[in-house]
Image (cartoon, rainbow, N blue to C red; front, side, top):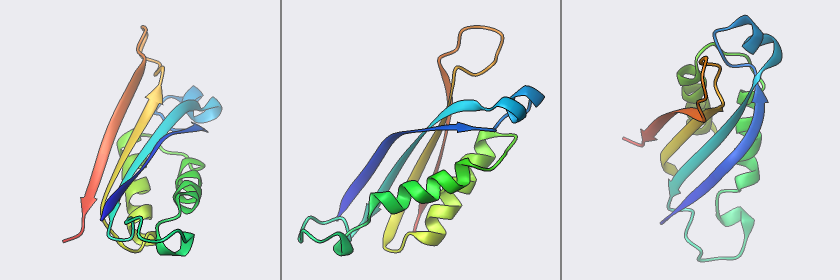
Length: 118
């Protein structure tokens, strides 16, 4: 049993409540943690583990859509991974908006969502 951490996936996405955010987009970063029995290191075959390229492609699909709230977008990321990644028993997603337009210098705003198989 192990963890797969994919950190710092970068996207220009249209997530935000302001018209200019929907029109021009913002820069975002996505981190994903997956815990699974498949992540064991017992074999050297990609078919025996969780392929992180597959994770990236699902994240990219979600990040190409428009949303108002980062919380909703993060939940969409989580639900997409839960539905499509077999073998996971715990998933965590962090969605970060870099330099959000708040009228002052703010480095980032993040939200995290997690799921554990019941």
